Image (cartoon, rainbow, N blue to C red):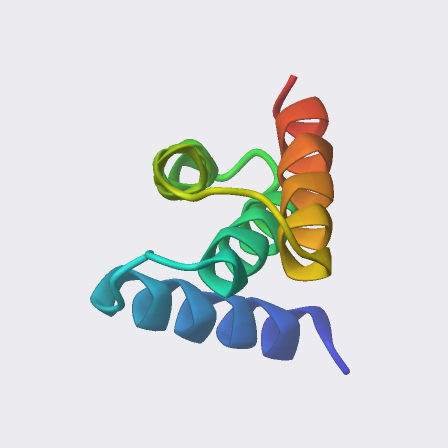
Length: 80
């Protein structure tokens, strides 16, 4: 896959994420993964903030929450 194709897929993912409501552990995980992939892009901070806010409203207690919080921690480290 070329860099251009990867950028197109990432842009589509970001556009889709912007239309969805973050409210469950799946959204926290996905947004954190997206923030990692966005790297230094200006949108990464916004996506990460949305993931943080969603995580703050949820109660951990299952493997899905562990996975999501792990991705969130990874995204936080990646953001500097």
